[in-house]
Image (cartoon, rainbow, N blue to C red):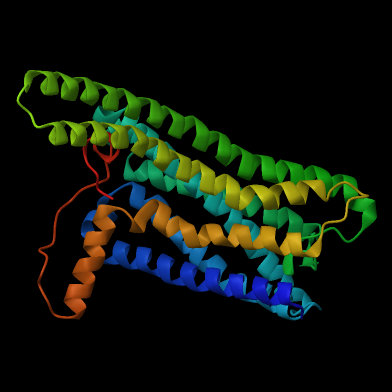
Length: 339
């Protein structure tokens, strides 16, 4: 194996380790904290982490074997099962992120009616649809024998073997990615841009109050005034950064792979092996980044992890808190710097 192959293998090992540990921590927080379990968003987060964990344990190792050993490392039946799971889990994670964005949109735009619009039952129904939607396409691909080892991506995934079925496979692939990646992306953009609009409105309102206060406090020290102005600027940027991370990580991690899979549908196009592996590793990196983007960097999860560590070490340095972030609305964006 050449140097590029070794580097790609090391990259995948790093992604696997980070994904395994971080998603286990999210599930541990969910089990340990009663407050997190009570939150409606916890349903989406635990489903997302569970799918990412399965993808890490059941798919990444076999892709790593494919990189280390160029020939197909798995038998036919095992390869079909792994490819089935990959298609299902990847689609499910995308829809889970879309569901999380819907939850955030309702919490921020309709805070007073959140408890009636997004109940635990509604979250379960959304996840039920996500599972049903995600199961449909791998079942169809399995029925038509479109799941096999693809050497371009060094993994068992959607793969066309018979040229006579190219037209049918092309239609299937386009519909699959349109109803998983594109649908999720449209939902993410719509909901988070609405959230950003509300966040900017509240930030602007706070800025006006701050400026009025600074005008009244004529004896305020210039350094204090400058700190207030700097905080205004950071407050305006904070919401934009968070929304950019939510949408940007989705596009950067999934976009190259999805575009590559669509381009390879053209008969005369050949995908470079190294690019295929890189695009595949990018999709896996989403499983490693999701716990930090959606959970572990939030104040509530940090407190839960600190409490777990203190309990293991038999210390009681930090009292447990009843911090509730199920309605993590404008305070998350404008009023408090929780991260």
